[in-house]
Amino acid sequence: MMMDDLDDYDKNCERIRAENRVLLDEFENWLRDVKGLRGEKTITTHVDNVDFYINTCLLYSHPEEAKEGVGGIGFFLGYWFIKKALWSSEESIKSNATSLKKFYTFMHERGDVKEEDLDQLKVSIKEEMPEWIATMQRYDDPEITDMEEVWRI
Image (tube, rainbow, N blue to C red; front, side, top):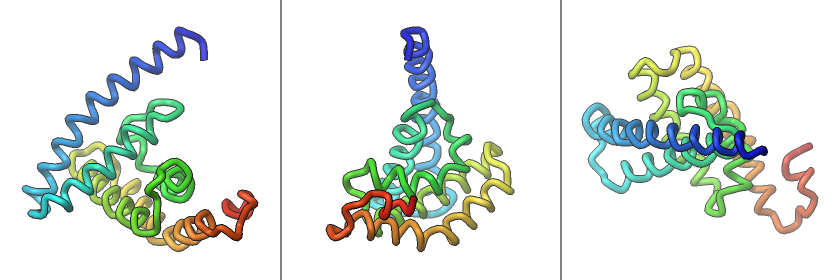
């Protein structure tokens, strides 16, 4: 990356992170006020899961706004999260899927995500979850040393 490109990248990330702070606060309120969640631990888990996706994964190589990330859940949960998050596990994949489904439902209700995109996200989670879990199991299997076997390349 050239210096100008790096400056643009940093500025875009800074702008998106500021927007994401507002979104995460609104999402937290939505979980309480609209969805009626009362458990602080549950709310915090959902917000933290979404925070990691929108402020780490979506900003990793080229900055994307949260609304643009609705189509990237398969890549995130089936590859990126497994590889990059040291705490990734079968349960954390399921937890993140639940949180992201709630978040993008919230984004749809705000008018930021189209209904078709939300529906596709839900179908992807339902259909791809078994493969994400199988990938996680292969990744954790000490008998498998060839990463091509883990990722089924």
